[in-house]
Image 1 (cartoon, rainbow, N blue to C red):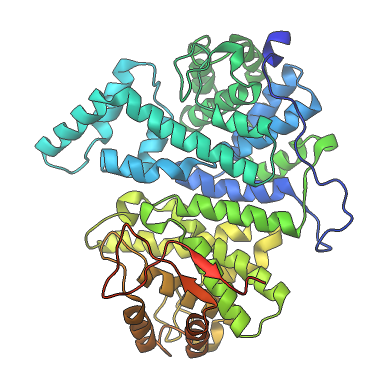
Image 2: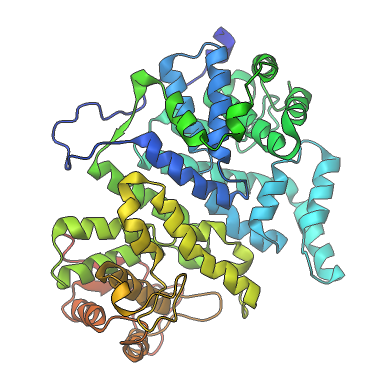
Length: 495
């Protein structure tokens, strides 16, 4: 046990145990929020729904069996639930390198032993340039093979460091952040991004990686396949002592049953150490919404900052429409997370420079319903889920996902829709350059009464006119016809 604990970060997850002074009477448990959001992370990783939850169940069992303290178990609990928080940060790069579906690539990579040259060669040949001409495919294969180690380190570093940063933004301590950052380190030192080895790898990361591999192989081949894979990587990927503990657990009757139960979310909720339950107030909920908006926007280089700009525009439109502060706060959370469903859309579609096929459009349109489903899993945000999920509905009934029309579309949705369209028009996209400001407003004016609400558009124009919204130039795009494009939004009336 001494070896297991050596070099492990000090326990002490930041907890809101003093409930005095909370901004709202509602007190939420962090696990309820993170467990719900983990379904979005599963989508981005191409994993079956509930992957992070199942990993948490496996990892907590291993942690308890090797005698981790309640504090370390609490750190482990959130390390595993948030292990994929940085998963969107390398999606665009994977699409650029391989030219295929980033979710399929990630899913297949989880069943590939990256320390096996034969398995990696098969992986590259299988995923490089699907559907491309032989010459182009060969070019991709040679590039990936020649720069393989550097590219792999780049992709893992981006993912793990972003995930650690998201955890810190959500208020978790360094033990959780470092556990996420070290997820892909291997016991023999051949992992990434820093080549840590043995007990220099945080215990949270050692257990999280084992749990991840166990769930992936259990999902595709059952208990025996999972056990075989874990045992086969003892001493290379995994701490042998942890493998020995897992072997005993895997043979116990009922060990695997919770993983296939429809009540896995409640099972994992009960696993949170009772002495270290983490509570969330309204302020911290705002922080979490802001952090996960970054996860969404990192999916594509063309959507950097999109969710935060939409939230800022929506808040300002709401201010001009006279909405009360608490209602604006509620609306802003929905705007921040309105595109969370895009985590389930391949970058081969999101970043495609040409015209989308009908099948690809179906995939894009599905993101709205996915957003509603994911947000709806969070009890504290359930009332905003249908508002956020309807941001592509139109007043004339020709929108999606439900084809709502006129009075069936509430004011909050109308506000988010105007904010979303404005940012989409004035930002660069893979298929077109950003529109000059006046051209964008002219296009939106033509959409009054059919796609967008006239009063909400008037509020947006008023905010632009009186300087409530100030757009700053984005130099790498340049300007068109003297138009001011934006990389950030300055709001003079933030409150």
